[in-house]
Amino acid sequence: MRMKFRHSGFIDHLLKIIAILLLIPIGLTGYLYYLLHSTELGLIDSQRQAMEKAMTYLDDNLHGTYDEIIKNVGAGDIPQRDQAKALNKILQPIIMEAKRKYPNLDIGYYWKDYDVILDGNNIHLRENFSTRRKNNFDDALSNKSIVFQVFGGISENGQLEAYQPIIRDDKIIGAIWASSDFVTISQKIDNMKQVVYTIISVGFFLTIFGTFSLIRKFAGSVNEIKNNLNTISNDPTFIIPRAPGELGEITDAINQMYNKLIDVQNYNQEILTSIDDGIITVNKEQKIVSANVAACQMLGFGKDPLGQSMHDVFREDSPFKECLYNTLFQNKPVKDIQVTYKDLADNPRHLLISTSLMVNVRQDLGGALLHFRDITELIHLREDKNRQERFASLGKIIAGVAHEIRSPLTSITGYMQFWNQGHMPTQKSLNIINREMTRLSNITEELLQFARPSRATLLPYEINSLVNRLVQFFGDAHGDKVELVTSLEEELPLVMIDQNQIEKVLWNIMYNAFQSIEGKGKLETTTFYDKTKNMVGISIKDNGCGMTEGNLSKIFEPFFTTKMKGTGLGLAIAREILESHKGEYEVESKVNVGTVIKVFLPIAERGEINGESTCY
Image: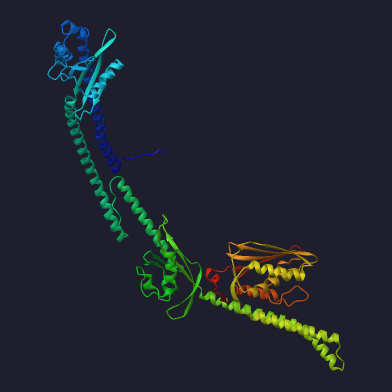
């Protein structure tokens, strides 16, 4: 990507100058540190070379061995200590000359046989010396090479020592030693450090002063922009003056962004004003942030609710407070909950409310939103429609009742008229009269059960146990005519049912499935758990004649039947029972293939499992 800069702005200048001001002392510090370190090493190396030259001088001026020198002066028969003193005195001129040529060095000889140090001074003839120096002499003699040893650092006034073996006729007779402290080197290093530290301090001072001046100028511009932002928050018509350099681009971007925010706010306000649904938002402190016109009108706010606590705005019996509180603090939003709310005229209004959390782009909680819609008119229209549907259903029921009762009444009336003509009733005619009377009784019983279903007492129950028992009873009655297959899912949750009523529903469905099978067929019963519905399901599948789509939509209507005999109330009663259980059903069928009816029952909650029952 190629980037082109038309001009170098204030920020660029500031960054460049600060970078230069920082790099100069940093680079200078690094260079001076390197120079100081190199000087320190150079001084040590120079001292080392001087020590090598001094030891070479002593070696060159030592003519012969120690024993030969002692014999030459006629001191071979005196005690060892006196021999050492005589030898020390003989070597004194050589040692003094070496010290003169190489000042700041402490040098001398070492006589291996007598284990004594000779430095030209008999007053403190060094017969006994430190173990450290003894070990260094041994290292030099055993390795036949110069040994250098550093003790302490330059800043600690340490010491540099050197040991060189003396070899005569391929035989080591002793060694030459030299030592020097770091006092002189330390003084030179300290002088250089003072100069270096002075230069670094001046450089850093200039850097800090220059950087502070630039930052102060930059901070002044930023502070001016901050003050202008406070102004624009109170005065939407205010425009921030353009600042120099890149800060000017920032102020232009702020003005442009603020204008867009104002346009979006006005646009949203127009939308909220024009819609008929009520919308209210609250923040985390439970204070109302916004409320559109429809919300104020529906809830009858006498004054502007913005900034007020929702506990002060909503009435005590208002369902909105609880919904908003649960959404905001328990993360339990609601969706399309129907509530009744009385308006200012104390008229009940039906509202459909929903709540949701409001989060920003960083997923931080900002508050909660309440959306509600007045569905009072819709409820009234639905009630009118239900009333009309009930009248239409009543007409169908009356027609069905008339049709079902007319046939047995016709038979009974015919025989009664026949007997009134003087004929005696026969056993056959009496049996027919009894059968028709039983039929009328059954019709009346089913009609009463449909019109007034028995009260359901719901208790936790294991559905597999009920299905097993029902299939066994059905097999005892019809097992020779149909193959019964059962597949029960294990560990199903308990369902909340009235055992007798659900048993009647399932028996009715199984018997209808059995009647649809011609010849030897198969009847499959399956239980399962539906995660989507959070309900337990029972599936009853047959391979009977099946149903057309037209008949499929009518099978649960009263008095609808495709059988020669039957009232058509069995499945209608089953639907009433399922609705009282808050259950559901699904039907799939294909002609000449078979039918599948699925019944879904609600699972028992924890409190219900502990023994609580529910009546409907």
